Amino acid sequence: MSHIARLESQTGVGEKWGFSFGATFKDFGDIRDRAVGIMDRTGYPEQNYDFKFEWQASPNTQIAVAHQYLNQDEIWRWHSTIFNDVGWNGAATGNFRARIYDQERSLTYLKAEGELDSRFVQSWKATISFQNSQDSEFQDRGPTDQRTNLVEVDTYGLDFQWHSALAGGRLLTGIDYYEDHIDSAGSRNGRDPRSQRPLADNSIYRLSGLFGQYQRTFYEDFELALGSRYTHADVDLGALWDATSASDLSTGHSWESVVLNVRGGYTVTRDWHLYGGASQGFRAPNVDDLSGNITSRSGLSSLGSLDLSPEKSITYELGSRFTHSRLDMGAAAFHTRVEDLITSVPVANGSGTIVSLNGDKARINGIEFDGNWIIVNGWSLNGFMTWQEGKSQTPVFLGGPEIDQWVSRLSPLRGGFALRYGSHASEMVDRRPGYYVRGRGQTQQY
Image (cartoon, rainbow, N blue to C red; front, side):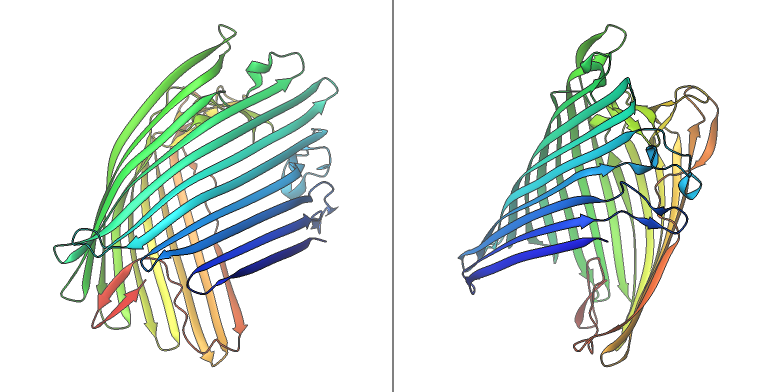
């Protein structure tokens, strides 16, 4: 019993300017489960607003201004509450009288892009943005245990990139910078409110980068892409509660890294393409990893740690795509190795409190298949299948023995197919992600 309503309007002058506005209202009804019946308190409302203005400032320059807004109210974490009284789907029953989550998010950006008749720069794009998010939660665990928490984040962003011709190929270069300003508050009966903040209050997180990628085609059949990125991250935790001294403390950390990637594509025939590559990854600890103090999973207390190192990874990928007339199909596989994976473990065996730490390492594998077949004009059959599996070496509890554990939140085995009909479905539509390979007189994308 869900309802969605959308109102939108567009106006403009062709090749000069255009404006669009939209509003969406959603009311998600309570979920009906065959074993439980109607799951009371699983429904919630949502409102969305958006507008965009685009202007052709000159024959070679375009400017766009856009805003998006989302608001969700009274989202019950149903599994933790007394309304989950039958142990849905094999899980334990809930005991909170209420656990309600709300969020608001908005994004505003100004983007300009254009082309230049220059020897050194042929095209460019610049974006400045502002994002705001507010997340709050109310927990009623009993007559004398009510808790609240609120996190508000303002994010300022800057991105600039440009393309240049170089040595028979194309060079993409760019810089980006993002800065988060974080306010946090919390409360609990009989506790100092400062000790209940979900994150360190009055904190700033900065993330900046410089990147470049060079692409070139050799002998019309092989394209090589080489890339690198330098990342610098630093954080100032303004007010972090210290239980030992019963007071706030301030601290800061910084990290930096250079990662590389190499990718290649080979046109075996006009219809058959192979591609592969290796890419390094880097993720610095975020404010939640360092200072988190939240309720996780089904009521566990999840704490951050200041003694964290960045995650580092490398991913190897190999894939193939075949496209001919009415048939388009592809397959790909990847293997990822992660060092110092940031995860959470109990502070003691059987404890209800978990804390962030760097696990030893993790290995993740995955495969995917997809295909699209236009049977006759108007009719098409398409489908997909994906699978992921990963294990990490992680202590059973803080300071305890290490064991192999399944990596959480990986996608399970998924697949699907669809038979479609459309009056304009007589031509193959190429929706394949990736980058371009020039082969045998034409450009293909995979």
